Length: 299
Ligand SMILES: Cc1cc2nc3c(=O)[nH]c(=O)nc-3n(C[C@H](O)[C@H](O)[C@H](O)COP(=O)(O)OP(=O)(O)OC[C@H]3O[C@@H](n4cnc5c(N)ncnc54)[C@H](O)[C@@H]3O)c2cc1C
Image (tube, rainbow, N blue to C red; front, side, top):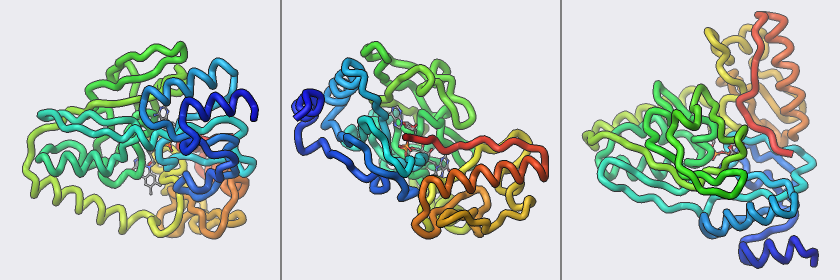
């Protein structure tokens, strides 16, 4: 066994290391070739050690949450994919909730509801984790992570564990400085307001119904494919360019919501890339607006 593999297995535990793991099993797009190594560290300490090993050995690595904003290449990833799924502690303390990076937003929102805390209703239907939601400053229906975040605990490139506020993380429209600074989210704390449980539940149900009505939740996707260009809606621009239902291979511009590219029928990452390329080109031709991908790529 290679030395790297042996050390990785020692640090993470053999049961937490998979080889050549198909990434289509770890993305909501259900697309992606194999990760050379797929690791699910038991806790933040183990995750820090795994990243330290990767950095020391100059092995490429990527930390992922629920893979709900991720397009992984058909060739997969020749490095170490580190999943935060076991960083799943979630505690309510007064009006605040502290959660590990791997906690799903839906679970955090449910905790908020159970404790009569308002402010996370917007997040209940976003299928990401706390870590991925900070990287993207995930948001919907008039709110976003920036509005509730107290601060986050992060691992720096140099192996230090630091705390940063939303301002320090430069949370903006679907952006943060977490990737550009090579940071890894370990934990985050949000502050909510006391609210009425019935009202919180009503809002959550209302937003869930809106999603079911508007979004193609019956097909695998990564949510909104493109960012909203200032002053426009990506879906409307795509529709106006005559691209509703436009298909490349198994990938399709959703007929239900043109802002979503869906995996209609065993799409490859190459299908999605080509479709997005053509959509961006046609929208540019038609309306002069540049579409920028919201989805992150890996491999
Ligand atoms: C049906 C559907 C609906 C959606 N609706 C919305 C919506 O309303 N609003 C919205 O904002 N988004 C939406 N999304 C997109 C997606 O759910 C969000 O962007 C979410 O925040 C991504 O979280 P994740 O854990 O899945 O991240 P992943 O997809 O796993 O990762 C996203 C990026 O973050 C990085 N990352 C993940 N975890 C960490 C970490 N701990 N430390 C450092 N980097 C990390 C990854 O490397 C990657 O670059 C939707 C997606 C789907 C499929």
